[in-house]
Length: 112
Image (cartoon, rainbow, N blue to C red; front, side):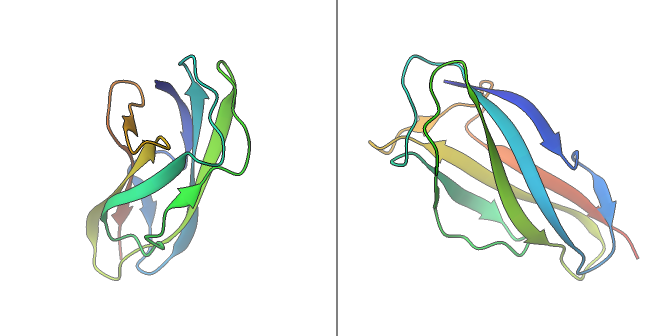
């Protein structure tokens, strides 16, 4: 189990077409299991110009500790609201819920 702590930039952040940004989420390990490099973030859907490769944790996160997950993104060229979803996945392949949700996400507004 995990708990959402914060994100930067916040959802619905306004950017120009093709702008680059890095989305970060702070997540607290609210369970009883220590997370390690066998845990990973998996791309679920969306197209904000990120690599869709799994991203394994690079640190050990004990219960009660937080981690920061960062993804470089590039806004699409088209105006509108765009979203990308990621999941935290355990070594056995189970999705770790974050605040009751199966995904964390980035939402940006592309404006010309």
